[in-house]
Image (cartoon, rainbow, N blue to C red; front, top):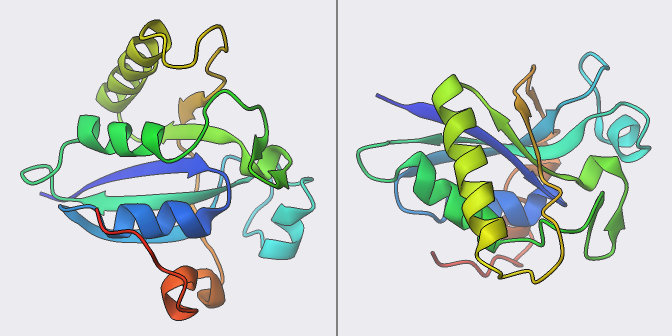
Length: 158
């Protein structure tokens, strides 16, 4: 049985690339979710006015990779202590977020976040990652799909 998970960790290009090269992930699709505008496009989302985050929908085989393992990949690919920012990208569209698709995912995401917070990895910084129920996921424009790979910039090998 295939399961779905949705993550946001800054620009979706790197997020998609990382998940796409994770064993057990069947597909990683760049898109937009978490906002209040129907069928948004990149220009609208990048304005920061739609409420959407650049995100990636991951379809995975739980017999090969668990949701908990995907959470570990997620936490390792970005800084979850920066509010509405990753690297040079700033704005709520670049926020750190987990959009859970089941109550079990919510429980696992919160437990994972709490373990990470209590680990001391970030010192006194607080994890600001939003954990919220998924809303409609809108696939990003085709030129954003596998962008790093298409442009010879892919470097992940997980």
